[in-house]
Length: 184
Image 1 (cartoon, rainbow, N blue to C red):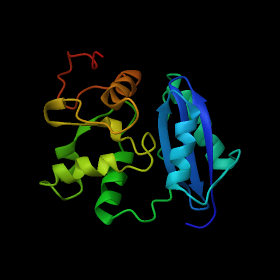
Image 2: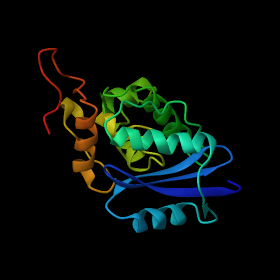
Image 3: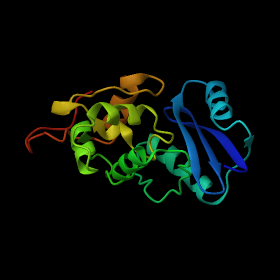
């Protein structure tokens, strides 16, 4: 990655951060209560980056993330990404996850099967924890077997995942039509 920049911004859920290169978004930090930890994480993960006001696609991303956390249905599928250094397996998983629509969920097993690795559920879980751009690659929409919530490595852990799923009125991939959304 050559030149990179980052921006910390406030949302209804807390402070988020975006870090990018010329190729696209390289890091996204989900909400935390304070801005300083977000900036520290971005500097740690993009050590040669500088704080700046985003323009173009990155300004659009920031505005869409703010709207998302305000409860607006947003799609991040067209955000350009810089996934340099990501393994082919993780890249395949991340590409499949980007196809999950707002409010749509799947399971770790179904996701790894969809990319041709039906027995790689544990590795799929590890890939979720290493997702460099959560929300944009919506790992919060991937659940454990039986529609259980599973883990979440962002600030707030599974509580954050539950809030994001509730915001989207997401349904378990195993839900019967008469069942409502997750009740968090």
